[in-house]
Image (cartoon, rainbow, N blue to C red; front, side, top):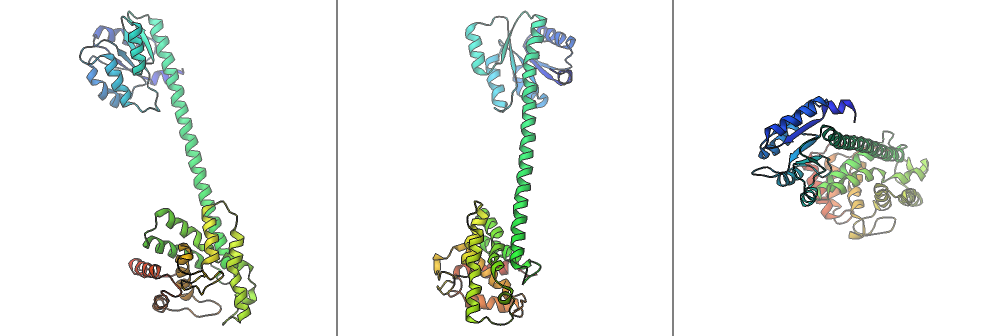
Amino acid sequence: MGEFFKELAKILIVDDQEHNITLLERILGRAGFKNLYSTMDPYQIERLITEVDPDIILLDLHMPGMNGIESLKLIRTMVDSNSYLPVLMLSADITPEAKQEGLQAGANDFLTKPYDRNEVILRINNLLKTRQLHLQLQQHNITLEERVRTRTEELEQAKLEILQLLGRASEYRDDKTGSHTQRVGYLSGLIASGLGLSEAEVNLIRKAAPLHDIGKIGISDDILLKPGRFEPHEFETMKQHTVIGASILEGSSFAVLKLAGIIAHSHHEKWDGTGYPLGLCGEEIPIESRIVAIADFYDALTHERPYKEAWTSEEALAEIERQSGYHFDPRIVAAFLHTFKEHRYIPS
């Protein structure tokens, strides 16, 4: 045991005989222990443990009122099971039955009266060395847990940044700021929250939604940046961004990317079954895709694109309400309109 720990170690002595306490304090003081606390009243144990936070307790077995076994049981109820607070039982006569009862109650060692100075120091040193090792292990575990927590936070942040960069890449050619994807993510999260989805589900949708149009990477500039309306064959090509997006995200083991793949594939499906690529209708369309469809539609309408002028917020809201039951799930439209007004959402 290091001398530094020995000087800092706090020893609590509980014995109803003052001369026993005085003797132990003299032995321990000469051995270099400086932080000695004592009481002749076992009913003070609870208070002293709280105030002193001892590293070891020397506890007399035979005491009036509350004996050593009862005191020991009290001590063990106060100490966390993951902590190591050694208790050295003191007695003039340790019978096998008393030792067994003491061990069952949580005693770590026994010291027989009258005391042998060398034995006292040896047993206390051994118990304190174990305490020191336990504290070092605890600190080591805390350090490891902190490192793991920090590393996990770094990985989560890196994953979030990758998602944001992927979302920005999907919009780079017709929205160089990448702001559309982030707005859609934010608005999708608001709608999901307004629908009463759990916090975990809301966060997942908010992170996955920005990748809804990642399939645009596979669409040529001639079509993607064309001003005005698409020709029928051009529109068919444009539709393929949903399939391309799902293909890009296919096979991921991450929940957010799995959901992003689902959204990418089905965010252009319509409630009445007239959407693409599969013509799903109603509840067949994943709820996450139904949420993102409205967020995407609103943001696309209210921002200028190469092929159109920006609509006003009022015009976009009116169009979404008009499309309730046709393009969009009526329940989600209602949640969107309520959320929009409640949060006073202002597109940027």
